[in-house]
Length: 165
Length: 278
Image (tube, rainbow over all chains, first blue to last red; front, side, top):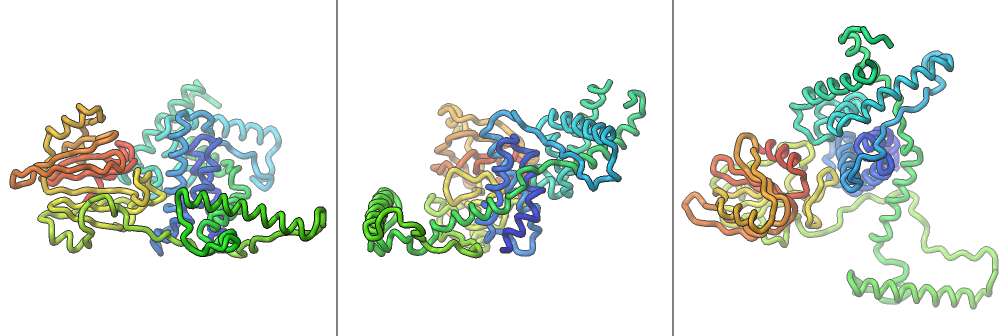
């Protein structure tokens, strides 16, 4: 079934997108609902247009609706996985622990950022969206993606240096 | 980690660290997602089935519609099901193994999605006579502007009433929508200026009205119910408009034309969208 293949192809990026925007408890549900809505809306999808940004806009909209009804950003947390066994040349347990700790530290700082800062960083680094895609998904003017990212990185850097100093 | 390293090293590190984290992000909800989506989509199907199984049992081929009638039908269907179950049980006795009642096999592949046949977006809201965009262009004496935004698909319907033009888009899962089913976004363009008195009236009725700037032009963000607005046409006549509340509204005037963008957008989203009009 073609649509199921599409779901499989984009499920990771869809779930991540939802987790960037919605509280953890609602994010998976948002991703699932977005795929269903996208399927229903398929006739409105312009043939030949790229599917990924279209889908991610739907995911972002679903996630945003859930964030709105959740009210607070409680439980909002992008998390890192443990290293896959095939990663690098199997680092020593000590190194692996250190690496995992650094990742968790960075993610904690990102999760503390305000919504628009966290979202723009996640869009560019975690979801690897192009500037145009990021603008569409985050509903910001295309011309402001660069400046927003640089301001967000500045604040992230402040958080990190503040914590480490 | 040393505290005295230079900022440039930190910048470089941050960039690399962010990419590293990005490649190690958890997406726990992705497991089994395709199967769950498939199940949800298949669950949507019975609603669209041509003849529900219970309708054949009831022997009522037509005339079962929505509303109270439908719930009565469901009750009747449930009663019929009980009768059927009783009849089956009576016929074959209790406790017979291997008895299964199948209500039709599940579809092996998902059917093509279909758009429910319905009226054009904005129809029935008294927005005016449906016209084509080309006809509207000829009829109004101003240039019709359309949003240039990746999320706004092709225009679905255009309505003309005097010098007032209403542009309607159907529901789109990428947009917050409106309070009206079947309508995703509404943009009204009027050859005239907003009468300040009518905005003051809105404020007096308790509607929140906030002055805003849209691409350098003065405007208002109207948050909440708004039922009447009046405009002054270029020839000085007043155009009274009864509003069909479809959501919040962003109202602004540019080059003598007043634009009203309506939907469940937030203020900033509406302004950003409005600024793409060209």
